[in-house]
Image 1 (cartoon, rainbow, N blue to C red):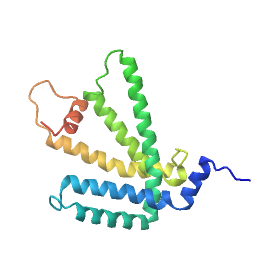
Image 2 (cartoon, rainbow, N blue to C red):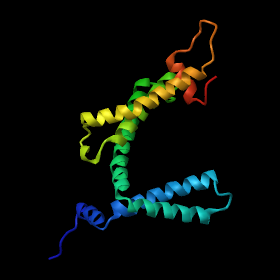
Image 3 (cartoon, rainbow, N blue to C red):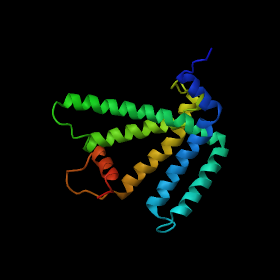
Image 4 (cartoon, helix red, strand yellow):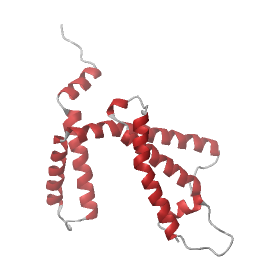
Length: 186
């Protein structure tokens, strides 16, 4: 009697033959590197063949480093979850708006961008063993140890590059952050 193959059997087969540990990470890195090289034209115009060779080499060098592949395989599903949460949040906001939703703008957009970056940062530093979404105290300390200097650096840049205001219309912190993310300080 013939055995019926399920979708789970197909996924298990793909895992067993290395599609998730070799082929997909290679394809992802190859595509990203090739797209960046094509867009930036670092090597000059009409160098698609050279860009392809460089992309293939970088992709092959990456899949040899299984530690990096494990990080990619752990990080991308978490980012996908974050994107779904953001999308559902936008759906709820558009439903509550009642009229045509024009998207997040101004300070609300800035805070949403900051929260999204923090969520991506946390997703990056969650180890493979913490797939449940819980971080240990040591992992939180590691995130804080890395992010605190970055935050201080950004605040120092804002403080140093701001122009002195002589009038009483001083911008709020949210407006200052909007200026930074909208193309520079004025």
